[in-house]
Amino acid sequence: MGKNNLNKSYRLSLVEDDTHRMIRQFRFSRLGFILRVVTAFVVVVGGLYALIALTPLRTTIPGYPDAHFRRVAVDNAIKIDSLESALTRWKLYSENLSRVLAGDTTLNIDSLLQAKEAADSLGK
Image (tube, rainbow, N blue to C red; front, side, top):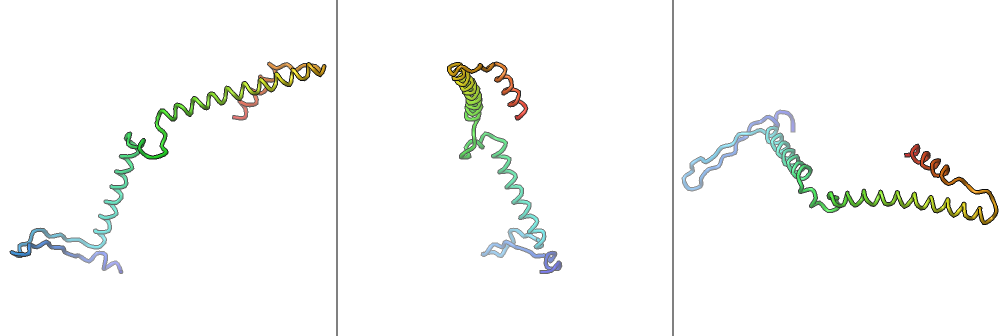
């Protein structure tokens, strides 16, 4: 299939069977036909992408989070962060309490919390 075959001109004629009257006539080459098919495919795929990505239709896709689920995820992340902070404070408090019961010196919890928050802010 060389370059000559791609530019070779073809004709498709639609003829009425009873009267042999020509209804429609199309002229095309293989290259033109291939280009039109590829262009039509790109336009259809682009149109479908735009329809799904730019409209509320995207929420019908299974697994796509809508605004409610995103809001719940953010709320859960905030709750987890506060629970981690409370757990850290509880661990420091229990460590301090066990030191007091053992007769050792106590830790300054506020300075430890500030040091942990500073380390967390540097790590993130």
